[in-house]
Length: 461
Ligand code: PMP
Image (cartoon, rainbow, N blue to C red; front, side):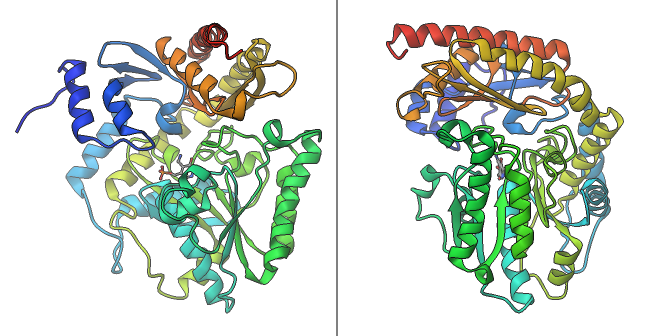
């Protein structure tokens, strides 16, 4: 067997990658020609690539490495668990300590009576579970026709057939006949792009009331649940106007439908509380969790379920489960991650130190000629790129060229920001210090300057 290591030349690694590795959400033929960026190591909030660049990670991997990279105690927790019990299942009337301890800890941290956890290995899997939970719950309550789930355009809930259907990504629905039956979408509370002449508050109410309109159109006796991210992440860090969530909560309560908060990104400190539902003052019946649960050190996710739903589901055999539900090594890593977060006061750091400093620097980017809007909640933020300041104008068809160019300039300046069409987004590790935030923003500013110059020289401005 050939040994492939970090020490091989970049070009050789890229050629092997192109020959054998199919990347997610990528035009692989194109990437194969260009060559993937190869990350070899990471420590704290910095990544190192195979050419030796030190890159500050403004995305915490994929919104997940909340406690930063290179934590020895996580490696030790994993090694300890692998030696003691690397695997056992939680089917067939068995359990093990890591799954028990993690479920109990999540129940302590979760708001209200969200006291029960069904484990999965990812956010997608957890949302697949949620669809089945909702439908089985209503069937057990003698209302099997309450099977429709309402979600939102431009939401993201995963890549499975069910979870991608819950999502409102048109580009995903176009591939493979989605959405599956029984999932319908309403508009998103994205005032900057879609609010027209309304004030943000008027628009927030209007978009929330689309939920009520949809419930009435379908028939309240056919609707089982509404799912949404407290803050849309992959859709572009879209923070709803203040009027939105109270109205959603009112409607959900009025019609007695289940509220699922997809906290895959917003969970575990991202918004300055343990959960985004606390920041936005909503009370879900089910929360989807993943990513920050283990800070990405192991694939683990789950559905956190309230007492009543758990009691109903628990009255029958729920014919659902994954080989790796509650995987002991992943659970041990997640427990260590939550221990670190508590011991180091990571949520308090976000609230009292990192967010206030980032907010000052982030909103100051609003003065840049390319930036039309700055949004930030906790440690997740977005910038709208605009060809015409002050007008909320967008680049032609919001095609993403300006965003792509800006992201490339970010890479060139050793900072990772992602683009969603022509919105730049960040979601850095929660442990980022104020000095590191300064490095992030200084490099982002250079990238914006260079992107602005390039857009001008290419006649796009
Ligand atoms: N829900 C949300 C809100 C997400 O952001 C994501 C992933 N970005 C998912 C679900 C899917 O999670 P995973 O990629 O772990 O399947």
